[in-house]
Image 1: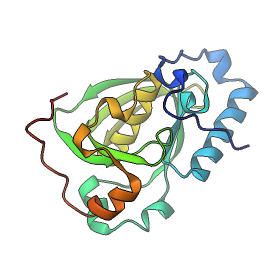
Image 2: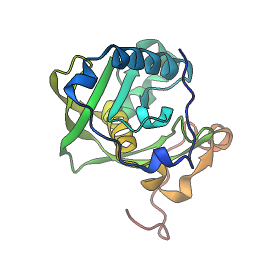
Image 3: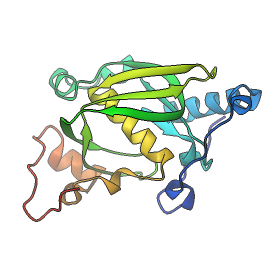
Image 4: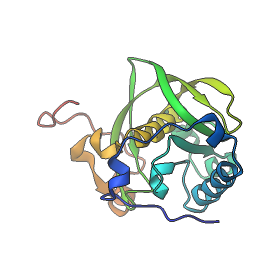
Length: 196
């Protein structure tokens, strides 16, 4: 079942989500929710979807960067962003336990800020501990675009949006990103832009 994706301004996007209990994770309702989130993410289309984005303040997100999505992306963009296919999985109660000092700056969008994008600095590599959809403990060391997706979705679970981290002078409509920024080098930091 397709779910409605809430947009910026909805208070659920600004609240810290609650952790899920082992009983909730093991429930039939959770399995259905994860499948509905998967279908909604794919239909949107997106590479991640957090429960707050569908109006549920739960520490749950689904992620998938399917290989068929990458076929339309230029090889040099894939290499620059260190973007590789990521199989579908759910992350529950995630905690970032390690963050690299090295950052990557790329345009980022969000299904809850439809039609916009901005350059967002993110750690190039992170380690995340989480529970999978079966409630089993997992640890992932993520690099490049996958690390970015994880950081973006975990921000949602903390009540944060990419606009809180963006380089504000790069904020653009997707139409203008296509016209002026797509395929262009990421602009250097502006001297009048505050560091975050």
